[in-house]
Image 1 (tube, rainbow, N blue to C red):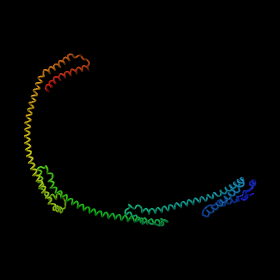
Image 2 (image 1 turned 45 degrees about the vertical axis):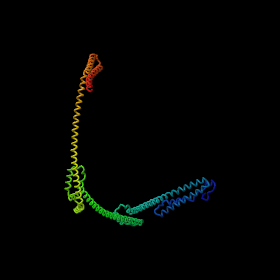
Image 3 (image 1 turned 90 degrees about the vertical axis):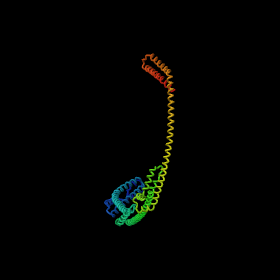
Image 4 (image 1 turned 180 degrees about the horizontal axis):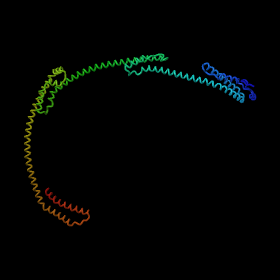
Length: 423
């Protein structure tokens, strides 16, 4: 019995003896193997044959699997048989399909690598073109600190840079636009730089003119100041001699008068102004000569008046000094006479007091001698009755006692005399 897709129902016995037929014979499989085993891809036509072969084998395999599932519905045993046959057939078909797919995959991998290589080449090509465009664009950057000469060189460099389709290909128009924009930026920067340089030049010229005017004004001011200083110096050459006259001696005043009388205005003028232009010197003398002469006359008058006053003060001071010396001599003589008188009286008093004290000493001599004798006898008695002392410590105490007694006797003798004298 042969089973097909329409004869799948029956008993278990019938199922066990039914021939499984998938409508795919071994001969057909063998034919596929013989037909497709040597297929190779060398061009698009051969590639299409491989694709068709894979499709045919795959469709047959899929049909077998579908039939397997249909035949397998009525019994598990039958299903196992169906599965076993399907597996056998599938294994045979996969053995045909697998090398075909491997062959196709090898070609697909080559095509993928070729595609990726083409993409890499294209990316490098575009990157290179964009880099060249970036170079053109970069020529228009950082222009603020460039000189006019550097800007001119950049303009020439960019103007001589060709934009061709051979170099920039499909980006040629974009590169040309960038070049024109960059050239415009460079021209604008150059014009601005030139205008700034011209403005700076004009400013420098104006500054030079202003400096020249300022220097001229300063020179005139200095000349005027020098003239004023000269006038003040010459004038002070005279007037200074008339200052600080208080307390000055007659001899110094006479020396000053002689110095002022010897001073000549013209000599002072040339000494003071040095290398001043001669015409300016003459002009200065014409303007201020009379003033200088007036300063000289006034200073001499002031000095002569001071000299007259000084002489009068000296005379008055001499007279005052003579009067004071006379009074002082009289006072000194009176003081000397009084001192001599007082000294004589003092000497007389002291002589009298000394005589009286001496008389008292003489009158008190017996008492002093008695007291001294008593002390001496007492000391002699103590010495005669000194015990024998062996201990060194107590012996030193005894020596100290005797010494103090001797000092006491001496003190009695002296103090008695002194007390009497003081009285």
